[in-house]
Length: 149
Image (cartoon, rainbow, N blue to C red; front, side, top):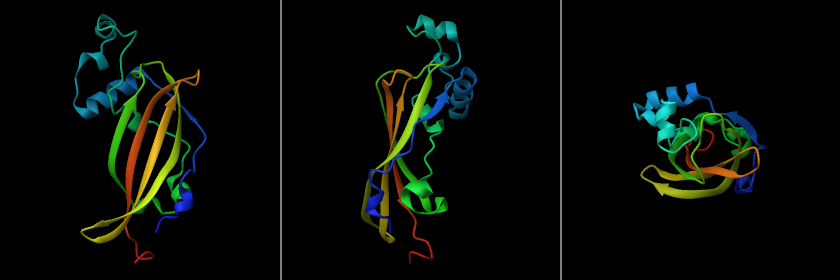
């Protein structure tokens, strides 16, 4: 069972540098060949100063958060159930974004297999001036392990 005291636990910000090659590889992995992710001239003609990252790109960012430590469970017991992104502005090649992670809520839900614990995790990305760039909210399900059964 997840400890409700985990709510509010957070990691310090971690720097993520957005590189053109990373954007290209991420878009290729998605199978999305929109030229705004690859072609700087096309991105400029579309009104951006450089190439733009795909909407789910923050999923590739790192934070110093250790979910085992924040939630008090083994990483193998966590299942990624859902993720949503909110943006203040597009993420661009050359951005330097500081990402911090926070436990927003810990819930108990009923499912087909019985009771399960759910953690709501929020990642927040800010630019070097401290302006909010994005928020990503993840829902994680904690699988029952032999210790929890």
